[in-house]
Amino acid sequence: MQPGKPREVWFIRHAESVANAGGRTREAPSYPLSELGYRQAEQLARVLKPKPDLVVVSPYWRAKQTAEPYLKQVSSVPVEEWPVQEVQYLDPALCVDTTQDERRAMSIAYWELANADYAAPNAESFVTFVERAQETLRRFAKRTESRTFVFCHGQFISAIAWLIFTRPARIDSPSMRRFYQFVHSYAVPNCSILPAYFHVDDTISVGGLTVPAGVETHAPHVAPAGLAGL
Image 1: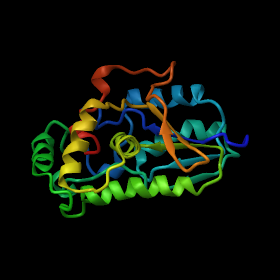
Image 2 (image 1 turned 180 degrees about the vertical axis):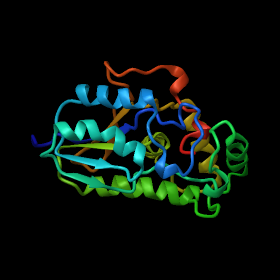
Image 3 (image 1 turned 60 degrees about the vertical axis):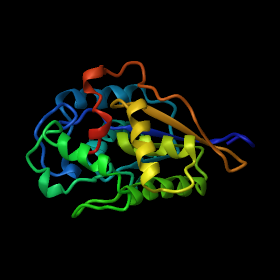
Image 4 (image 1 turned 180 degrees about the horizontal axis):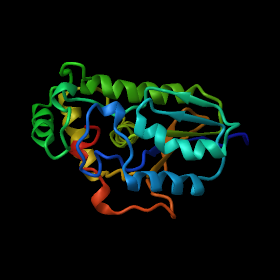
């Protein structure tokens, strides 16, 4: 790496999942890709350049499936699994065999309550979710790789961007409401990439959020922000 050149971390949202496409799903960690999602993952593998020094993958299946075609091309690159999975803020037991549209009312009620410390059974609070994103940024600040690709999730990428853009002093109910407004103005399509730059002066900046040319995508397959991660 050239002296003074920032280290790059590319946060990559997974390809379209069955849930994103409106299908009925079970547990969030096991959502598979849709038929379009499999095509997107193959297309993404062909256009992702340049080669990274490290690949980080979410433990959730849809992110692993998205990364798989690319990892076959860069078998010599180290791969690590980090907790960069999507937020689960609803009780998973209430979400089994449902669609995103059927979960909409629960999602709206959760965000209207805006209790940053509330955690449903077997779910995480907004505070815990944001702390997980903060820890990811702190962890990357200590790494030395010139370039890392992170296969992760839409609302997690939104949290990364929100933290870098707004640098909230506290993670509480008012900041939770501000985050909800942010994600509705900052759509993260499937296969989109957010590059983050870690500078030598310990500051972090971000580039533009884009879907690489050559990856099939269209607006109906962008999950509504309030439902991302369900």
